Image 1 (tube, rainbow, N blue to C red):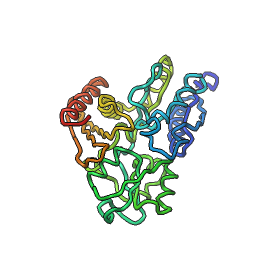
Image 2: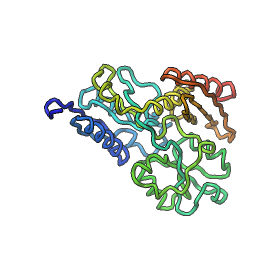
Image 3: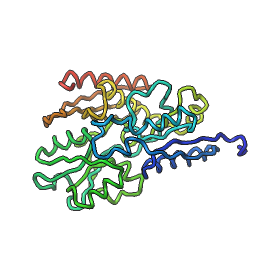
Image 4: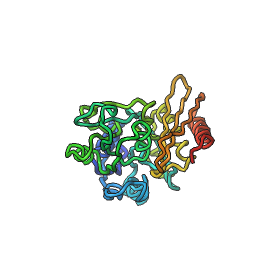
Length: 305
């Protein structure tokens, strides 16, 4: 493809180290397809408000709003997101055009002094700002003191290293992508800490009418990953999922059969989790979403609200 006919694409991205890694990753793949690609780095409201939990200041959309404005105004063509930061309902005029192959969706335990959560002394301070992680940690260790932890990955690790927490819980995917695997002391199995919907997956957002981009991004999509996260996000959407809801959903796929598990915790402090699971053969995204709706219904019947 000659450089004159090569599609030119601008990627809107947050400017945190992890977001830039994600955007550079997509840039390299698109360049491999013959595109000319540049990055438009932006600071979002979610990056600026660090003294309060997301659930109190407007939720996940704070990380994507400015990027969507750049798409709307034509300053960028696509936006690369960590899918767990993307609201369950896309705003009108925007589409999720591609879900890429998923990295490890599990949560990681990071601590200087304690190899595992089980090793912590009674009443130790653990850092997370995720309501999902808070209720799951509380179910595992009701004695722990869970304290808020906001900021990008480097900020969170610095606060840990300063001794503000005995340990913190982070997404394994982010640590692995930034070459920080050595900071991981232990990766929680999903039966201990069920991941967030979409955790570890990258999604690419476009304006709905950009059929040219939808076709161009096709080779970057990973069908099994997309079906898994579609089922997980359907649970969350049906439950009114937002940062103010302690909800976990995780799907695996084998031989065309999707297995989906979900857990809901009481944000008011009860340590009992409500869980539900189901499985079904899936041939497309609507099948995956239908499974998610059934699991959400089972959660509600079991007492989640």
